[in-house]
Length: 252
Image (cartoon, rainbow, N blue to C red; front, side):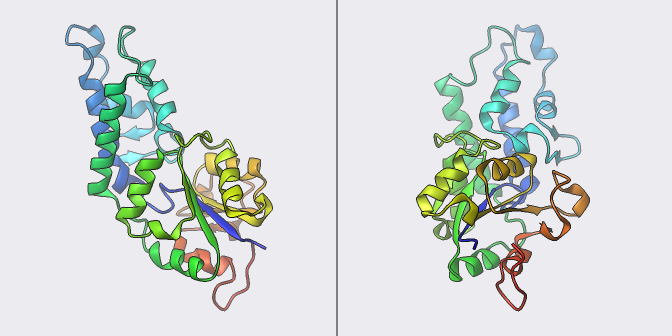
């Protein structure tokens, strides 16, 4: 029996591009602007270059769901950017001013642009009211994730929110999911993961979850071929029925 439903955040609860494209552009612009004026790299590396390296097409306004910005963590993104910047550039993962400024940019920008992926409140409240425990495991930072959920008015529904900086690693490592199971007092095989990326699917498999529900616009966009058609839905609106809420029986 499924007792705990663990959600990814971006692309599942939040509209990925509407929420995060302005954030990505702002962080990339800030980072590129720090390159010393006398550096030759200033003429070679632009904010658009930094975005492209992590799977964001600035000209098209598109975020690749399989790219580093969508599927990875901020730590992985910083590491990628570090390899593109001048040798004497600040250490992005250790510089306190850079870290704090980026965190401020993320919180301020996301607060202005946070947009749900359709009607998420109704299905989430239906699950909560029917006794399911809910959690979020995201490769975003925990503070940012909590702010997003608060902005959408659904923060009260979640037993736990785990980010890449919460001390349990980042997906596809399973520790964040296992931590949520521990807090909920359930076994991993009594949980399911709802996600949209290969990192989500990998974490669910590694944690031993009962199943994986994929959020994708179409079946062919699922991140792994082993995900069955009946486990692919376009939005969270279809999730309660999969769990037996309503006239149809549960299939997972």
